Image 1 (cartoon, chains in turn yellow, red):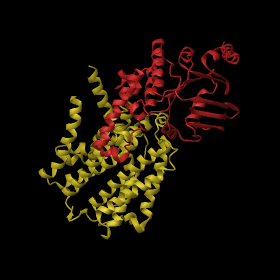
Image 2: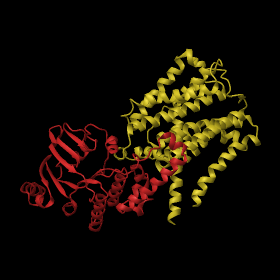
Image 3: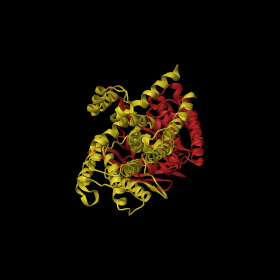
Image 4: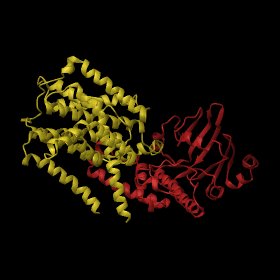
Length: 326
Length: 256
């Protein structure tokens, strides 16, 4: 019973802290960093459904993030399209590209699916640089306006932070609901035993395409918010490195969980900014962390796969299960 | 009334004819058993009937309409549910959740409804959980409801699969060796359970090696040997059938 209580109260408390933060601080840098966390959370919510629940890996989610960012950058740059419409268009476009990509990949699983999405990611990286007329090539797009919602221009770091986090919270709540109902169970069934899932009347092909398009759309939404938050997009942001980092968040957080990847996402996104967030940290420790960031992330991932394949969520589950039997 | 009818069903794997020109009917309300020595083509036949494999020739009709070439999920929606010889439970999910997945075709909520979790969705979810518990009680696996699929003993996995198959509210239930791995008491309980399912109006086609169980519960038996139907009829006639005795004794000698 107490576990259930914690499960209800903890998210509510977290949401209250997140929303109250602009009341207690005006630190622009902090807002900027936390905005990145919120953006990554939106992508991670979709990737948790795709990879953590349905077991379908994608190494191309940075590309969907990029599609969303460039779409908003292109559409809103000259003020031609209102922000909200551009953001929706970016989300839908990313989902459509995801849908189109998922169809021919239906027969692929495991490593092959990873390779196919990796190939897509590389194609998009080249496209972001070469399609100069739309993407601005290596220079990227600059001067992307801040979000405007009706009469309100969201032009302060605090405002952008709130916009991104409210979106992230809504997405996480919806994802949390989804996994507890019929479609969420179907995703887990797909991961568990595909024959069994088919025998239960699940159209596994359709479900795979659906969840891939959904997670691509969420990555596109995050990319769209990113573009109008920071005001520019450049192709290096949407590299394979980012895709791998996103997958690492799911692996570290644990499959079959939303809360685990959320925790891992917060941790891994904040890691490079550790010096600003914990002021007293010695300089050597900070430079060590920053120089070896990728290596630390890699080693942690290997350790997780070797010793705790369930990730953070799996560790917590096995701890509470042991507690129950006592 | 004929629930299921096959005509001239054949399936070849290279030079091997796994199912060879098999025709039979399953009438509403009966328990029909499909028996035969190992490698007789029983599981292949099941895969053909449920859309997991396609026949090279022949036709399958269910409730008067052809279901030939239908994908497995469509076959389930039409009203045929199955279990597997190698159980296909979802190990990461609890037993109750396994049965809830079986209710996929009966529940409506898609991605939008599921993520919004409106009162109507919540209500149907609650009803589904109750139904899942009822089905687990029916097969006698309710005490495992909250255990992960991976932690359930082998015999019980088959029972859970039966509950999961029943969850789709099928008109025809195909069971692939449900008694394998069960002890005498459990087999007896299974027989009672199958009779109750039959009494609820579900027709059953069962592949089983436990001859005691087959003779006890089935109304009719089909015997397959090397892909061919060699006999069909009520249990008492099958026991005396010369071709059947030869097929089984032949196997015993081959084993020895």
